[in-house]
Image 1 (spheres, helix red, strand yellow):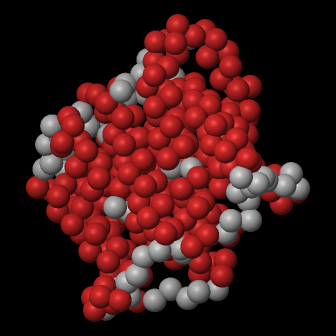
Image 2 (image 1 turned 120 degrees about the vertical axis):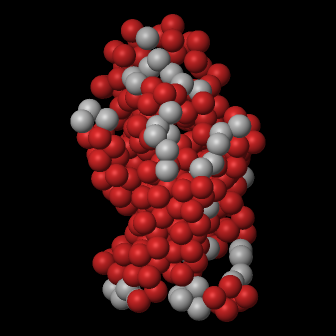
Image 3 (image 1 turned 45 degrees about the horizontal axis):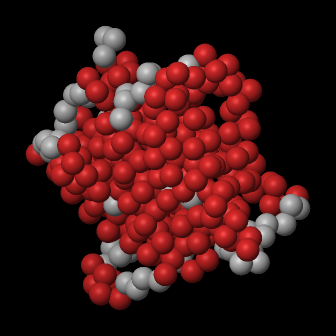
Length: 308
């Protein structure tokens, strides 16, 4: 009973987390370069840290010896999760669509499995591979609008390449969350990671400003920072970290397959774009694929201990 309840909760969270993550990709497209990308990422994560510190400063101080011991890992996670996954996505939004960003990000589960296999010798079960294959088929059904011949006409921009870089960073971030376990509480650890990410972004912010790219401190920019800090920042990252601790990075990574579906749904609600039969066909493949991928094996002890 005790094992099944957290597992059922994980399925619910796996369906909700991509919604929060999709908002960052939609925001990247909506901003479309009006705020310099490094400034956008720096403001987002600085504000995230400032919002978290009233609740976690005490924990950071009490566990300062653990923070000092884990600082190299925390800084690396910050560089990946807030650095590599930050400005490149906002750069991407200038020249590519939110759908393309979501589609490229949906390859994260495969990269997680590959990295886990290459660097840590993780085993991939037949059911897990089958789930990944079903999810990929569902994404392709959406991208091609149900017509495989569309693949021959797909084109990629500089924004797509920036998204590839961010996707690689996100996959490494996900795997390291598991394979660099922490004695810190989840929220305290996330605060430390965020502070590490802010530090990593500082020199790049200086370079961006030296090149004449500076953010305007107007109501719109501050509003964007607040939204990015609360929804795809605190909400999505904390939930993602919790899921990694509950079911491991490979199965948590499968939620990325839902991102293009959610982006299509948000476009329908916010932009009036009507859903098509191929959206439903894609969803019909993705959902059972996620079930197979997440139910393939029981969480390992390392995955369960993760960030406590």
